[in-house]
Length: 240
Image (cartoon, rainbow, N blue to C red; front, side):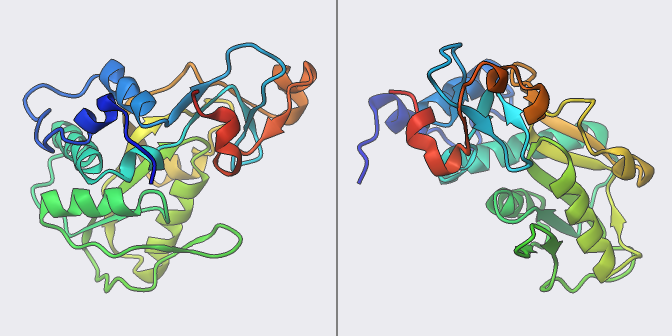
């Protein structure tokens, strides 16, 4: 069993309602992420690898959010922040269902549903990455909140939207996709179809220090830095 650092031991004891009256700042979130060994950004040393994202794109940074969400109190804190955020922009007093993409946003969506006294079931994912909804008894006019962990290209969010509407086309999906992190690039974000569906992203935090690039235009690839998938090779990205 991995030994927790003294800082992480303190962080994992923060009460879930600790930031209700004083919202969690981006600086505080990054400190939590670093303590959880979840935040990495390339330091310019070309002998070190850079990130190959699930989309196949390259990046100089990576947030391993599951290293944060695996701690129940931290997942509940972020869920509470999402609920507070959505209440500032939404006039809905009742939400029937909360969904998040499989599998990284599954637990987060459940925590949000618990706060909102809403229904929740996990989505599933096909081998090709397509999201599917097989367990929810959705009925017309159900009000649905869509929660995501990280927005990079918007493809997972679009797949969730498609999966839910395929079960019941007449549900009402609140047009605010609530996410913890938006690390997208406007020239790459696959948001056109979501925009046509009147959806917009409302993240808690943006990480514009993380750039995204195709392999062909990636400056780190050009400089011969090796591409690696972070989750499978986290030992090469993890802070010492």
